[in-house]
Image (cartoon, rainbow, N blue to C red; front, top):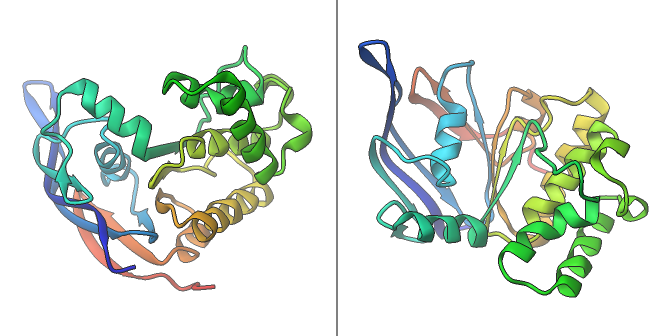
Length: 233
């Protein structure tokens, strides 16, 4: 894991608040190597989710740069940013954001259909991924017919559909019970090992953080500490 795939340089982010501005990120520097698993931890309000959204080009920094494979991403117009997100980044959130009127297969295939892939190829890829996350028997079920853990598995499969180089997860187990959360933890780590997808996870779950390669601790908009995680299996 020698190649830096993602780099944040001097990231600041502020939002209007009353007559002034609330500064959430205050000069973040961060490098992530290809195939690495990084946990971002810290108290509520530390800027963790804001950082993740900027790394994935869902939001723009007030100041600073984000480089993906050495290229600045925010120098691009919005259509090119959307293309970057669709091609290179997968997102998993605490709440799965599945489309309730579509089946599991259709939800997973959706990013591929939007990217112009044929219906047959997209469905085959969706079935492959749903089998990989243990839902081969649930491909025709809609989200309302699935448990919370199953819905999050569908969301993970959807995030991986376009074979992204980077997977960003924001509290992916925050809405799940302990046992179901552990299963999602294992899926994330197993997929990293299987495909070498680079993984950045925002979490309050210490067990999940310790299962990563490295832990980055944020506090009050700054990187407070970085270090290897405790579990390296």
